Length: 330
Image 1 (cartoon, helix red, strand yellow):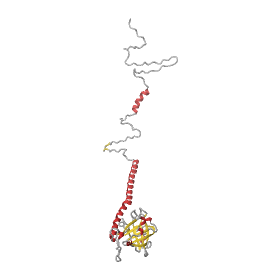
Image 2: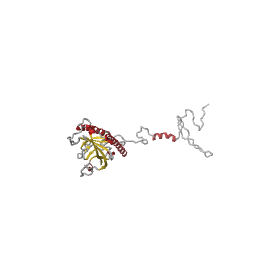
Image 3: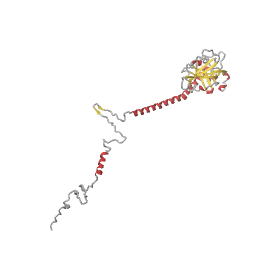
Image 4: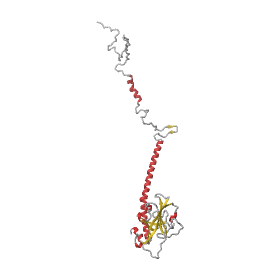
């Protein structure tokens, strides 16, 4: 029986006749009675499933739009800036790096100014604190040390050993020596303020640096006239002088006597009103008839555009041989 003839119109499906890649056939549209057409199916290689065009192109598009970090042309992320830091080569050579990150701006200048101002204010505050500490403790300690030295000098001058209040009573032939500028010449006590000082001769800045100073042309303690004394307005000297009122006691000490004064007036004057230390305060041409004491200092505290004046009148004299006056706890 001979080979069977192939059916006309059928494709050869034998393995020998099959090609390497099998494609689907394009089926022509066939119109039927209901006017329905078949769809054209494109040829697709076998073993590769058909995919949607949109889904197939999406991964490739994303890979192109999202550059990798290693890509030099990558755009910075939000909030970042790309600043050129490398030097540029020019005909004159390489330009130095001048980055936008180091270029001063208005904001950076303002911040720098605020920072410098803050540092200066802190430094100034520390200086003020140190000055205040010196005024309160340092100067008081210095004045106290110099007052001790002046007390020793006055004791030797008056003939005592260590205490100026126990000097011997002078004889009738003894006359007081004129005071020497810068040297101690009297004692001054204010019981209400619990203060006492050694008074030196002279009222220059050098003289009254560590002690009250006696006006050279004014009377001596206990004499008729005006025993006038000036002092700085610091905590070691006349700081609390404004607390004195009429009737308060001020005691002056000489080599042989205690002189007890009572405050009669307190007032504030201008620096040029020097008549307050005249023999009769306020009346320079008037001859004095009583013994007075005047204390002068700067006003207000920490300034000197005014003067605080305390006037006092002598109420009694007591010899040192009789001991200390009752006003000083004697």
